[in-house]
Image 1 (cartoon, rainbow, N blue to C red):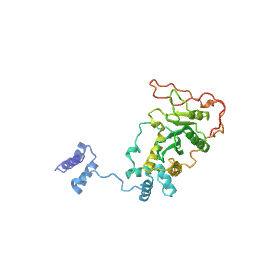
Image 2 (image 1 turned 45 degrees about the vertical axis):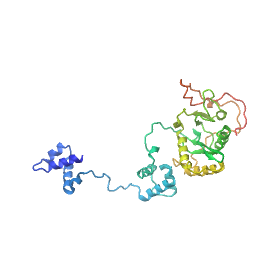
Image 3 (image 1 turned 135 degrees about the horizontal axis):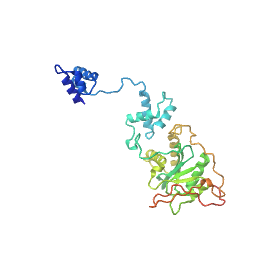
Image 4 (image 1 turned 90 degrees about the vertical axis):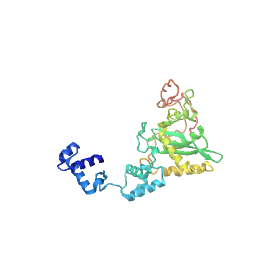
Length: 338
């Protein structure tokens, strides 16, 4: 482009040159041609270089003080994005309060976003989100950390709609009784979900020959549907998996703790801090809501008809096990739910 401008100027400066004809030959407007001639006369060859198109004034640009506040909060919380940081800015009384997208742009402009995390990049998979709280909970165990002579196994429970962390529990194992006890606590506080989404590991399982485990039978008798992710497709539990990634970044490099109580204290403080105003949408602390149903005091009678789901036939290769389990066979009276 610069070479063409230099050629145009050289030809236009020749004696008797028809400058308008040259503009037509170079397919530029006469005003553009005379602009390059004036710049060349004033600055020489440097005047033919491209100049910044940035406007002289940007009235809507974020003021430096707010940018500094955003960067300071990001330094304190290096795993937080625009939505969470906006909640903290609001608590600090920052005005005018920038939009979450503006905060993300500030982080990107100052190279505070990790390209490996794909911030702002198109995804190869399709997002999904259930329409209201307690429509679906995602639940899984994260790979644990050393804890005295054993290990701490973090049990995470996430509401799919709000992404609110309903539970973050330091567990000594991944057994049915452990999960059931903590689910009872979550049910008593938040109500019963319509459906639970889990993977195919212990203690939920989803083997074609043994589709039911004691835990899934208990959940089905509560009227809670169970969905399983496809084998080797962790993206189905993407919200919970991302939550695990944040846990790993914040706890993975910390020294081991001596017991489960110290892990739980750290988890409780982190969970409270990581959800300012119940981020990421910035709604009130009660955004997880409560379902209309509550945990029954005891289980009795056959499985509710509404909880039954028809099982899909297994694929020919036997890899993609059915994602939704049907209800277990009708059962008689049972003992207390807890």
